[in-house]
Amino acid sequence: MSYVLGIETSCDDTSCSILKTPNQVLSNVVSTQVDFHRRFGGVVPEVASRKHLEFLPLVVDEALREAGVDLSALNLIAVTAGPGLMGSLLMGVSWAKTVALLHSLPLVGVNHLESHLFASSLENEDLRPPFLGLIISGGHTELVAVEEWGKYRILGRTRDDAVGEAFDKVAKFLGLGYPGGPVIEKVSRRGDKDRFYFAGGLEKDRELDFSFSGLKTAVIRTRKTLEQIDEQTIADLAASFQESVIRTLVKKTLWALELTGFSTVVVGGGVAANRALREAMHAEAQTRNLRVFFPSLPFCTDNAAMVALCGFFYFTRGWESSLEFEPNPRLALGELPV
Ligand code: KG4
Ligand code: ZN
Image (tube, rainbow, N blue to C red; front, side):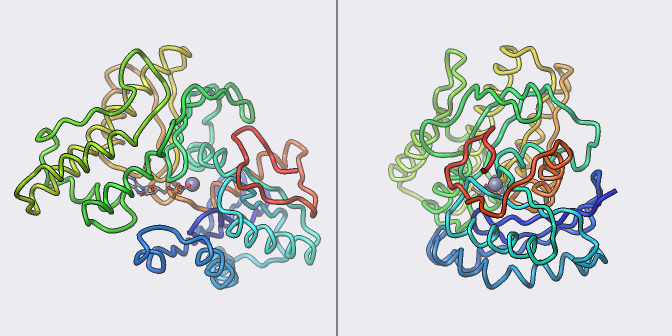
């Protein structure tokens, strides 16, 4: 049994978690910066790194206190090394290096995308590859064949906007605020998803790549052609947009399952928090006898618990990062920081 301290600062959430191995999350503190970025309608990188610097000591203290664990009891530090915003990543990585050095602790740099795939394992200890991974976040949309941990074959990815980015942009355009995913989900509940039909992008011919910018433009164009815009119309637009996204994600996931022969899907990333998507995936899974795993809501969006688990996995396989390693904003799935 070990205690792992995880740190996540890849974008605009400052998070620290204490994991008691194999998978008991003793604490998972997330300090979101949305209030500071809201008035700009999106994440401002300079603001994000400054806020990480300010929040990190508080978030770490709270995570240790909640877990009832002292720094001296730790066995490992795991920190997100990329991909993400360089300034944000640097804050977490510098902090982790300093504490590792001061307390003579081993350090493991973690791939953020890979940690989203590990998130479901926090609550399902026996979940193992092979499976189909679906990463859906603010920066990424990827369908990936996971033969084993660390061995990834990208089957499809977005050619333009990431799915979370599409939620954020459409919400901004509809005047619903930021971040877009949760607010579109909420407004959609009182909307009619069948009022408008929006093509989901690359929906035909078993194409596994995604494209969301055409969908975003279609929503904008439709909104502009409508003469009367009331609250109900906005809700109908939001619901119809969400419906199109869900239809596309489900359809491509099923195609990818047929192609690979896998019968298990593991979903991760902020968009995985969407309840309508979760329901649609589970409904398909039931009729087709598939297994679908979604992390519970706090482990969908960026969090340090998934980072701690992923870091521990590599540590037990002999991997350790040197104190000289640099964060990499463009780290690809399957790459580890050196
Ligand atoms: O994984 P995440 O926290 O950060 C990145 O790694 O990008 O994902 C954030 C994204 C945002 O675009 C946000 O709008 C979206 O996830 N999101 C949602 C929901 N909650 C967050 N999208 C749809 N429905 C939600 N409930
Ligand atoms: Zn993420």
